[in-house]
Image (cartoon, rainbow, N blue to C red; front, side, top):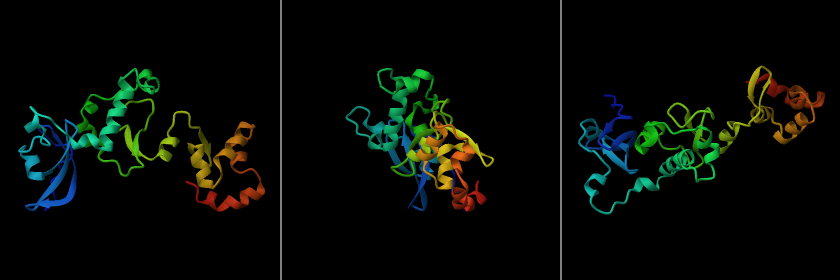
Length: 214
């Protein structure tokens, strides 16, 4: 029997993020994000029927609380993206909130952010906006490495070569060329074709790569 897809389902303060490989009493255990910033492992039935409503913070409302979720990298990333969009005192504000980049209403709660984005694939990944002129919202964000993010910078140069429009760095990688060398040729007035294929000898060395281009 296929397991129920509970991703995004809310139960009190909890939102189901992803199933784990664990089982308890034959039930799938889900990783859930709590509105307080905590994370809880909850069996599927308790999410579906709303029995479990928090990471435990509801029972600690009157006392000292310590939420492990606040030590998650994803929680820190969420706090930082909100800060640079909403806090005029942080150095990054002019490039974010100062030019109209906002955090959508849904993502003002950490649990919703984590439910939509999931856990980052590795420590090398951080959040990246696909369209840099749009805000932090579902559909416009992904977990990406520094290399992927550098290709997505607003000032990254997009060029057309061999019928493909892509960042100059990507063309260089496809052809096995040094970005700095190609960039220098372009600043000296070379066309994109002569910068990427500067001569007959060079053409011969990358002919095979061109045949499989794209």
